[in-house]
Amino acid sequence: MTDTTVQPLTRSPAWQALLRHRDSTGATDLLSLFRDNPDRAKEFRLETDRLVVDFSRQKISGETLSLLYELAEQQGVRSSIRDLVNGVRVNTTEDRPALHIALRSQAEHIVVDNGNIMDGVRDGLLAMANMVEAIHRGEIRGSTGKPFRTVINLGIGGSDLGPRLAVQALRPFRQSELDVRFVANIDYQDLQSNLAGADPQTTLFILASKSFTTLETLTNACSAIDWLQQGGCKNVFRHFIGVTANPGAAVDFGIMPDRVLEFGAWVGGRYSLWSTIGLPIALSVGMEYFIRMLAGARYMDEHFVETPLAENIPATLALIDIWNTNFLDAETLAVIPYDHGLSLLPDYLSQLMMESNGKNVTRSGTPVDCNTEMVIWGAAGTNSQHAFFQLLHQGTRNIPVEFLAGVNTNSGHPGHQLKLVANCLAQGEALMLGRNPVAGEPWRHFPGNRPSTTILYDRLTPYVLGQLLALYEHRTFVQACLWDINAFDQWGVELGKELAKVIIDELESGKVSEKHDPSTRQLLEHCLRSRNRTGPA
Ligand code: F6P
Image (cartoon, rainbow, N blue to C red; front, side, top):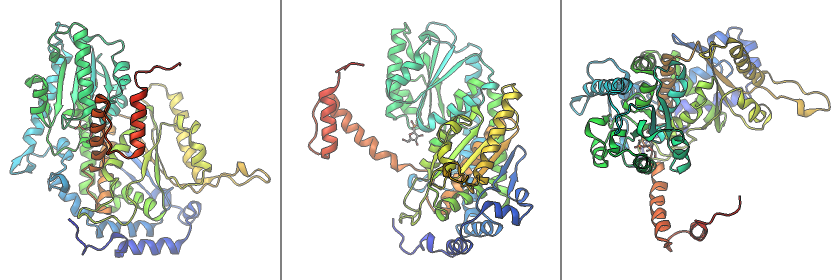
């Protein structure tokens, strides 16, 4: 529905004030900002009980921030946050609330459709805890009576990235000998490499899919069934647990009803690691640490809901994102964790932020009249220093960088950690300070004045991880409020899925429709002519 009476965002008073501010202050020099305000490092920093967030190296002054907070007020961020936590149907195109916060809440009641969803949340956690205990104790076994040793999560997108990240990040907190692996891609090589070395009789598959209709996941599940059968497992469904918001489809697929863990349709896929989708995390680190992760997220939820905008970390970082994107024309945000445990964070955030806010229409269906989400990318430091940091330091683009680092380590090796942290701090400093040109050697010039934010924590624990991920969820939500878009749908992934179905049929039948565009037809015909040919290596 198009509401033409709505004033475009870029013509709104707060936006116009920000434009005037940007134009009147001209090119911002970070070093001058520090010179003008000796307390800047202290003032442009916020903290939780575990995180220190330093945004003093962003190209913002006190006035910039005040104007950004006015934009947040104008866009109704406060009331949108209330709507989110109160279960209002903020996902308007799918007519659902987005209640990932409920998954870590200790509230007695959160009402959706006249029902208290907290009963279901508690039941879900209990069912998961029972399942974890039964698997750890070897009470749930495979079809040949052997306890499970390997767990393979079959899922994609939100049914993969969050659990995969958390299992890796929390490896030092592992409580079980289970070898937890992840397969997402429909490319058989992914499954193949993860089946290598696993014994079918001691392998448990988690079939993780909110919709239980996802092509990649169901295709991998069918191949997993073949592998189990070839490996001598007769009752293959004793090797499966289904995790889904569509339990009927899971049972129809063959999953035993008492092996289905449910979660609510009001949990968005990319916000679902806190739900039973987190089963691989709990199998790896145990329920106690899983619950600590929820507690960390809950701390951030309370901070987000209760703290005034000017001290609100997710809101402040979202406003800085808007400033960088819409006023300083940044196209991308590089996320660089100096913590190998978080090396999957850029992948996870690329789904969270780009699938949530890569949109071009407002909540009322009118075109957004400015850029929305940046391209989120990155890789772990220090590896990335030896790969793409050249471009960050001397390339021609404005690329804000987000550094994350644990001051202490889970690795038990303080010597490595010291060098890791030193590199993190040095990169932020180098990006800002730059280096003067050497006469006759312009290639040695570092322009500097490049913005970054640094998030420090003590050690990457389940609690810290929960805080961090909830921070990014809420930051994503505030961005969406500012742009007036729905962060919780993902219609942009549908078209490609539909066209792929048509092409799958054509590749199977060998008949190419005339309806394709000439390029697709030609490529398709080439595939048909060339398939099953194995050329020289
Ligand atoms: O195609 C996008 C998407 O719907 C994501 O939003 C989701 O996380 C992923 O696919 C997997 O979906 P499902 O959990 O339903 O298999």
